[in-house]
Image 1 (cartoon, rainbow, N blue to C red):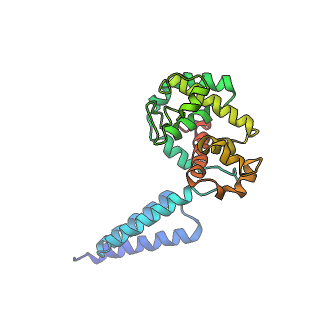
Image 2 (image 1 turned 135 degrees about the horizontal axis):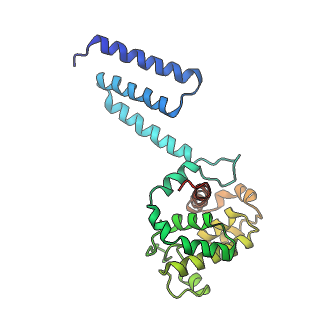
Image 3 (image 1 turned 30 degrees about the horizontal axis):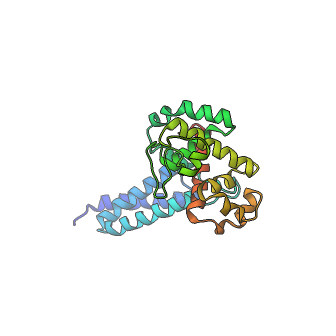
Length: 236
């Protein structure tokens, strides 16, 4: 393909300018995107777009992995706020509004932050009152039949009953684990037995034995806390 030498020169200059900016002090996200665009244009002219695509996929995967990385300076289980925001943005706000009154009522009655209740509902069912897991958990807060019956639920698919029972169960776990949300959420997901066998008394102590919990549970705890952070901040 014939390329005007003047165009090629301008693209090379812009590419070099972008690299110089990155090396001189940390470009903003928008600046990085612009540099990437110029690189893509240049590579396209040089017939290397397929390689560029592979590099882009790798970069996106690395970025996603970095966003979910554990941040010890914030909280032992804190999931990156950006991931929580992305999860919360997947669902229309109207779905949450439909159950807002039930969530607030249960939150006040059992002393569980409404942001935590919403985060659990989103992680468990994506605000789908008809959700059923492979294990048989049902409804918004994914109650097993035995748990539902223990809290007087007659219909796990009834949003008010499900939220009331799920929040009460979560409140009981928070009391059991002295307000340690990570431990309570791990027990909500994997059962109290697994958490008890760790022999720990705080979220910090649980971090040392985190490898003993299922990978699904580790991800669940971080995701719920990330969602809670965004609900608390009003980002969802």
